[in-house]
Length: 203
Length: 203
Length: 203
Image (cartoon, rainbow over all chains, first blue to last red; front, side):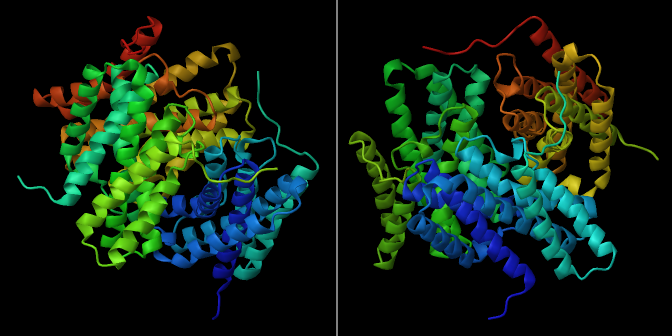
């Protein structure tokens, strides 16, 4: 069985968000079914909103049961393997940041496939990357990561701009994808590590 | 006018959720229009999310104005007939549980009609059953029933598994439907009555 | 370049909601990207939900990048020009009320274009008018204006009923539109100014 770059990215992103969703739910002491539901919603949320906006229905996870199985297995493994209980927040953050980079690229790519303009593609990428986490945080009734001080959606937008810039300079698409995924992940880590944030407005 | 089993189930589910929505809104002291809106959203929420995910648009309630009239009349009757004010919570719970069973079966059935695999059908049933209540609780800013200690989505999932098991043993679909609706309702009542819940994870 | 009445209404509504979204976000001290995102979501939220329910996808803002540019420019101008900091609440309220009237008419009109019955058209108008603000308030974690004491969705519903009444008496559609937009705006202002509200239910 051969996978394309996009499929590999989709599989890795699905796993990353399933892990981050499971950790969030375990941390909030949900029962096992609750953990599965949150893992599922986190993993498929961004892509579902993207496909709904594009009108590409029935949405992907309904047509390909493998994604559901992948999330189920990942979530069960996470439940079984959870050990370092004190490092939940860090683990959650790292997998969330990985998923963010991977899914942003997927969204941008799908926008390109639908013939949309670069700005709209970046918006789609941002939606694909961010919405799983937003739905997860809303359901768990915590402040969505997207509205915490550290940049979040901004990382997706900057990553999207970088992607189109790299393509503009004729970089191979697959190379550009890997670079942008790394860029978004690294940006999140640096920003959170050094507590950077954009200036804001106030009274 | 003859009704099919599915239509009867849909009508009963619509009424059950319209009542549960009205009670919630009255309990939260919304004005009459607010009560109508919450009754409406609770009744059509699950089916709307299901139809959006399937791409079956314009969504059903837009094509068939009878459902809107049904909700309007049910909601007005609920407003007029409300009496036993101290039993709001119990009444709300009973109608919510009925709606849950009825709509879960509708969602599963629609998934089968779209040729989806059993696992996805169960997910669709769970979404159809749960989302009206989730939106209702989110709008009213109360903790969604789905995340309270007692099983909720789990009842839908177990009901769905039971449905496909019954079909597998060649039970007539209409009989299986009635059994599963009763099962989901009874499960909710037993669980809440005896304060049962799934074990959960924690620190 | 000639604009139709509908296009003028759409442009004005987009601007009004972009301003109200920007003000809300600035008031909550979001960073510049956060302000842009909230302005964007407020402006396109209602129309997006409407188009999803109708199955008119890809949703409008994806097909016409001009709306995104319009929101971007409006939001940046709002950020730059904000002065009267103490009057934020009033300005926000006025632009929100304008957007409400403008978008309600757009939603009703689209319902008519899809051949839906008047009741459903009014529901669509209400959704188009209200949802941008609901999403904005939910994301910013404030109590949605729609559930505050003053009538909100009710203004859209009454405006919708007025619109069909005016059409019934053979008023020219464009005149009826302007009248209804003014009616919804004036109703909101009068209601909030004189602290009117519908009677409600309670214990």
